[in-house]
Image (cartoon, rainbow, N blue to C red; front, top):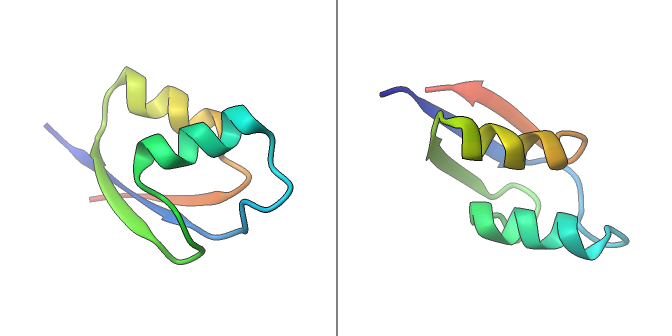
Length: 59
């Protein structure tokens, strides 16, 4: 199964609570934090919710 590398590029200050919770669920706390998650429907849904804050790459 492929993995997705997610990096937080913008600050979470001023974001709505659901977006904060989504970033927290992905393991992103500070700008520059990177996490690797499995590429499945659940992860894609989380990414879609905060796509304006993160950078996504395969691998």
